[in-house]
Image (cartoon, rainbow, N blue to C red; front, side, top):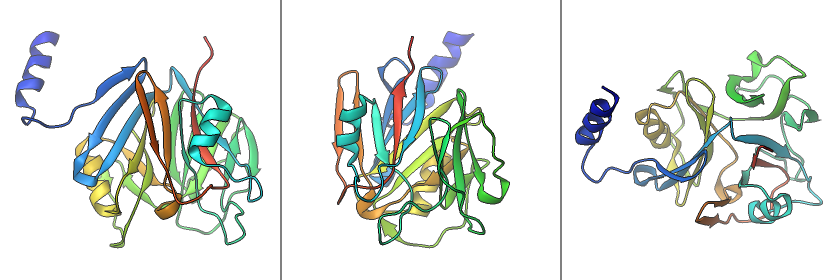
Length: 233
């Protein structure tokens, strides 16, 4: 029955439609031509997530930090002010690096053990088991449905999750994209929740996984970043 189901899925898929391609154990890649994007999906049973805040005086590019930390993937993080100070909650390796920003219509990406979740800022509850977190926004996918978003084009960085929270997907666009179009594209992939990280010139990605070597540079170094790192055996 399982073989039959797989064959049916392949037969029913649109001809030439992009598919998830395994590139390393626990890592899959999918191009997203409908939003000029790259998707990288990580199994949190094999990878852990970290947040690093080098700050305004030691800002890093995704490529530089990936090399320094021997990470599998690094993207830019959340918002920062004109002085380069991170805005909103940042937790890295279980330590609160920047406090929660109250009374904002943002979300919080949080990782606890081998599962991730995205909640609204007002739903966030401190928990010593949280290993990594970034407060940013807006949320663009909630319970599998796109949210109402202002029409605006920019390069985008996002994080999306499946319903179980086991698989974390990094999303980066190569070109300017509408947030609403990106949300609809992610919903069509049956993802359950998604949140935008900082975009525009901040958007950047560096990946080394299997035979994949991918660097999508941003306009400048940033004061906080999101890392995906292999778990120790």
